[in-house]
Length: 112
Length: 114
Image 1 (cartoon, one colour):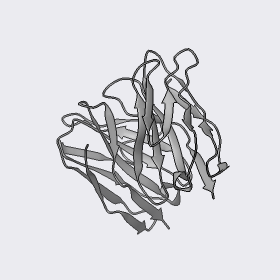
Image 2 (cartoon, helix red, strand yellow; image 1 turned 60 degrees about the vertical axis):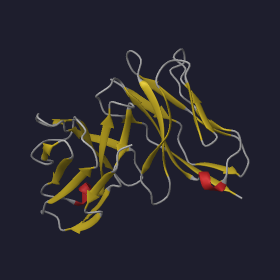
Image 3 (tube, chains in turn orange, brown; image 1 turned 180 degrees about the vertical axis):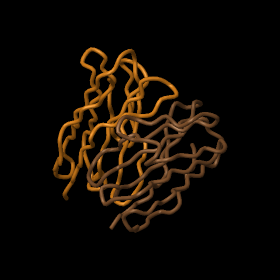
Image 4 (tube, chains in turn cyan, blue; image 1 turned 90 degrees about the vertical axis):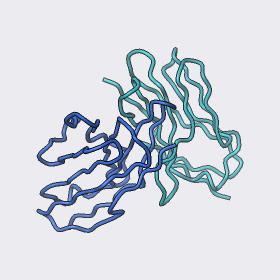
């Protein structure tokens, strides 16, 4: 079946460090891929998405590229801030009209 | 975007009782989903509730435990029946808009069963 695997957390970084959170997926065909973020005490928010191979999603300095050959959608940011501390979820949608399937989430903690 | 509200935002319930969670969307949507997020865990899909058809449940979830209603295109309810402490979770309503291929989430209902 369809599934998403994320790197285990927590990830602890100093401010301005480079961030990578790995995400790989298993799916037939060409799913759409997403990163969602959940800040402390808040609801789930869409961070970025990519709908086809080689697409790059970007938002708030975060980027992720849809790599079909490696079935990956790794999240990166060049310089993290304390305000980026949150839980990050990688997700896929196999086809329009179906629900998102989530990875287990990765907790990021950034210290100043 | 779609704005989703849920009621109640949180509740503390006794084991053996039932709680109905309401989900209201500010626009008409065909696809609606209910998820559960157990403490420190990811989101697990409970069921898909499309208007005009019976809800479709994921493996491990049954209608007798989690009955769902979807009376129109802007509203749905999820009932957690005969609750036990293992049902303590955040329950989230979500909708998908075909126009932008995005899925939106409500703020969640935090349920504690004692």
